[in-house]
Length: 159
Image (cartoon, rainbow, N blue to C red; front, top):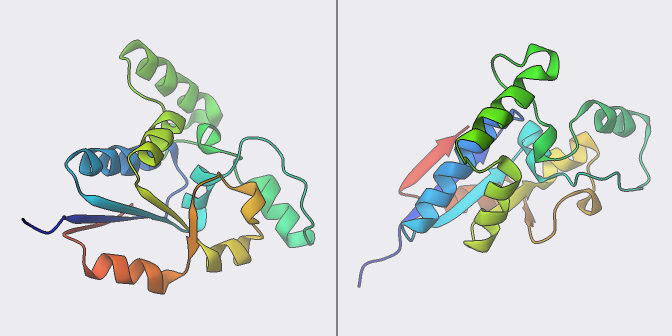
């Protein structure tokens, strides 16, 4: 019996199309029976934010970050052709016509396939994000935990 392969992904980008790529790869790897970890850091944490406002105590700078960052995966902009927010609407319409799964559903699928979704605690502290503001069922860890997963990884990606 062979050992299970591992895929690790660092999701640094807060852009819709790059986050989609990370989750498509993660779901594909999970379907091929890989143990998969997505380590969300900096702007990649936006993919894990809840859509609704969560009342938590924040300082001034934390409040400013919260206002500037998109709330939830579906509100993330595109890396190219964002066109002041019109680009994401256009790409979502095209995706719907082609029956492509939107990012929120890709995240749900990843959770159903036991993909380990990890939020970087150091970045959460820097940006003033609280666990209450993020999706249920995710893990919280620092870079050392990611490196432990990546050290055993067969595929390690930075997106």
